[in-house]
Image 1 (cartoon, rainbow, N blue to C red):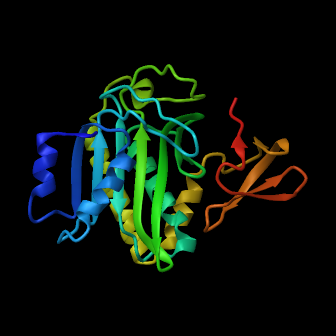
Image 2: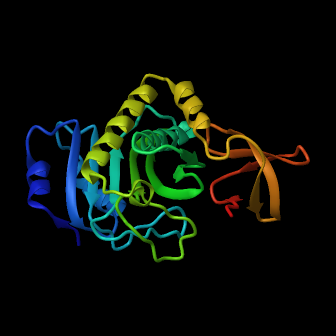
Length: 266
């Protein structure tokens, strides 16, 4: 059961609702799950906010892609989900949403520290270490996206990690002082909203070009692993549907969906 703060209750029932509606939770199982439960209560509310952002100090069941979990010390990091309704995005182009949130995260973190890149599909890296991960869940209707829930964790002020996650890093470990988490959240949301406007205006090529320019390991050959074993390859492109295209040392082109290939990071 999620626990509301007084401010979130006031925000939730205030009229009229603003374009970006923030909900603060003391604790929840998962902000993505919370937003799913919220969808029914938002249905029919007029005017519905363009973006709804739920954030929390602690998640009891935070998760990433597949079976991955997310380690986060209470009150130290950013744990949030954004609900949006990009009905103008066709199903076959939905990866553009993943690119938009990745760019928003990269931009906001790059304003604080250098060496921030996007690891396909939407992890955020500082050098060879992961500082942020995102899980996107969509509901489809009539060939378009009806609802999109973007759940993100950013390691902000945590000073040490104790799980078996291979390469986590926090902003604190990089810059050695605390960062205002709410200010960072609002900056990320502002940047994501701007990229959504670009998408709505049909500026897909601009977003794709930026995404590719900030991609982790975008130049040169690096080690990877798939179901057949280890190999070295260079990134060729990321297709509109999100497939990663690699060229191996034998000049063979390889195409991968999410979780079909692993980046070997030593």
